[in-house]
Image (cartoon, rainbow, N blue to C red; front, side):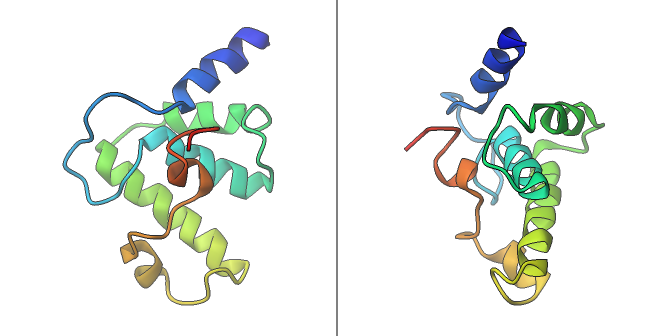
Length: 110
């Protein structure tokens, strides 16, 4: 179990690889982590490790398309909970809307 948590933490740390040409900032795994944490209403990345692993194992269209899909999911969850209020399309188009993992460039990043 500890090794699984370590491997997950390594995935969620900031990457040194250059970002692909995508208008949605951040690593795909960070968007996945934020959506999983929002779904389960926790900020514990270990508690959501199963969700993260399932989502990362899904067939991918492209990393950018996947980030858009997860941003839409995070926007939808946030709008349903009243923060931010508004329309899904406006939320997805807002470059400032990001979950905490994306905003901090990984778990514990600053």
